[in-house]
Length: 224
Image (cartoon, rainbow, N blue to C red; front, side):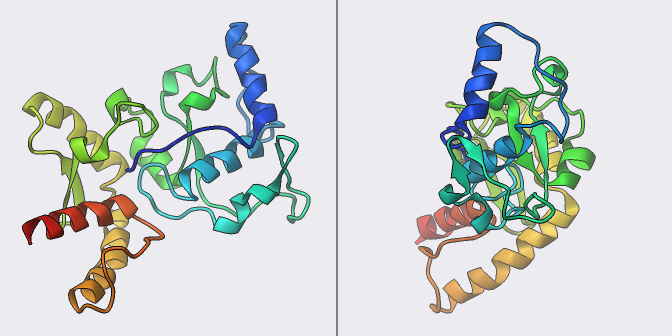
């Protein structure tokens, strides 16, 4: 779960609108997938997240959907799609579910997440702010470690037990989902094999699960 730069610099019509609501302390309109700014939010988040689920880092949006050319005058253009929307996976996820009713369109609280992770994994679970991936204080490499033998994330063993006990249940819910473990293993294993055989190297760009790959890289190269 990598750090995300969540600058809303494309869907500016939406962003300026929600800023005015916040400054005026005005309740947000009801959160629905038919709201006029829904796709503006979704696609700018995908741009920030590089098409990956904010938590699992699975690819849930093809790259061509969030190219900068898809925006015009601060709005996301959907005119080229049938039925007028991109074919993507995932859901808009409210990090803090408590404020969803009153501030359902708050940019700071929104991410794009794999649908099953959002509904079956995280659900209404309260995730500690220390694991909010766009937080200025969030550092995946200080908080997490990748266990290659099991292909799971764990809290960094150097953290105090109280913090590890806080982090690990959240990781099990949103990152160590059984099917995601298998997908991560199936994606990474052949790539690691190619590196071992000197057919590929650690500098290769990863289309999915980049943080797991980077953690494995740091662990492997540190030992040499």
